[in-house]
Length: 117
Image (cartoon, rainbow, N blue to C red; front, side, top):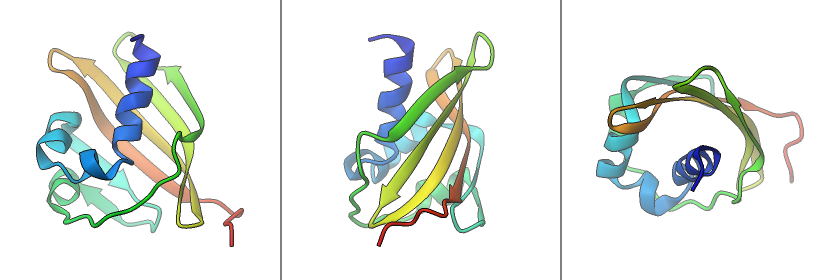
């Protein structure tokens, strides 16, 4: 598996109930300094994301328009559009590769004007 495929698989893991609801998986893939600006505009810390009791959800996979842009030897920007229950958002994540593998450092969701009905 190439690095782009590995990052795409990890990003999609954030949208699969079985991995997103797995505290160990989330702990292993979020950097200590992780921060998220959610679709709602709210700011979330790493602890808030890991501790949330997430119920079942069905995101549209594969993620639409997923693109990976390398920001250097150890950082990548992943962008795409998410859709859950007709709600779409433009998404971006910054991932860092280190000794323990890939860690997400930042994530942001911005609602789009093309909400489906």
